[in-house]
Length: 451
Image (tube, rainbow, N blue to C red; front, side, top):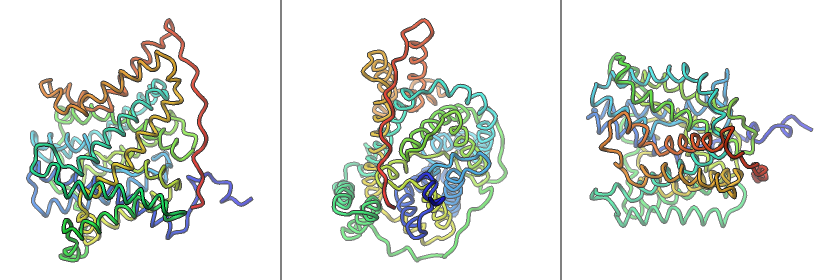
């Protein structure tokens, strides 16, 4: 038996052309996140076009390097799983808020401080991971997936209250992209079926161009090369008080990274020990965030966005996300490629995202299925945690009247669901309480594919 045959599918190399194809599929699905994150910061902080281009280049390069680091896992930094890293979500909003209140140099200083804080707090957090059994992590992943589906849906519909909300053309593009992805997955076999997500996105982009909703003609306009600029806002300024929102968020981020690590292992059929492997993921987040701070970026976090692609395609090799990382770095230095990716309409990206993120919800449900939900106490814990976690997602601004420190945690549905499930699990499963029911045995390994 060859060494190749003995390797777990996660550790197997693929032909270079296939790794590049599958890597490009990951990039196309997740590219909207760094673009939208940079544009949000640019709009909130009134940045010049030149600074926006610098940040966009840095976002692609750091996302690529972070994806490579997480996937290869050198020196116990990175979990050696098919992960990608992105700026996005709460870290971007908090970065923009700190910048508006204290200035951009202080915001970058807060990111650098938080990157170091991850490493300082990690040994303590590692001791608490035992309070995150499958019930807690499964609950958190369901909320993560639902939140991501909402993000993808808003890419199609636009934000409520804006003139673009519910634009018929955008709805047609988003729903058509979903339909085309389903059609490709149904009609094709082998490699083409595994590429159904990317083919659906490309077909959606071509449909947008045919409808006049996308213009790719300016892709070659301007220069050929671009590069991230260190310290685009000047020397960082450090303030613990200004950094407090990000420091508090980092605690929730570590819990989320734990769930992402476990669910990624579930998706690829690899035995993952949260206490052993989650700290490696968190170290990767810390190192890349620390470096990103010197390029004006918000916190960089390991993303679950690509886990759905892994499950849909069945391609489990971590070297595919290494290829995706290399492509992201290349995009960061090649201006025309960056402009091409940026030209894909958000509704098309949203249609693709809804499919991929929906798979994450299913993965969370599968994990909960092994948490003995037929036990009434377990069902009660899960129900309360999911309900509280969904409140800030379904009702934005619910906690707007509360102090800002409280809002940081309460407005994160993922953090609320994880903390609620963990606390209730301890409350009901304490030594004097009812014993935890036996968990169901793990389900069958993911289906094997030839590619």
